Length: 92
Image (cartoon, rainbow, N blue to C red; front, top):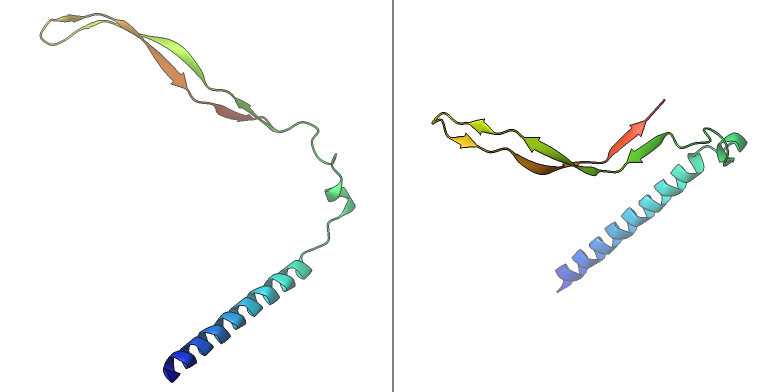
């Protein structure tokens, strides 16, 4: 019984120490970050247009030619629909 109590107490102390260390580390990191400058915080700084555009995907019809196999049997041509995925275009 006493052994369980000691284990629980040690676990509680370790958890408290870890939580306190994490809070101290995050507070130190927050205070060490540089203050934003006026130019960086202004909303119209930089480019006026977004640099990248996303072109939507689309379907096309693709014709597959007929062919003759090695046994000289003729197979007719046919149409299929082909999906072209969306692409991102980032002009510089």
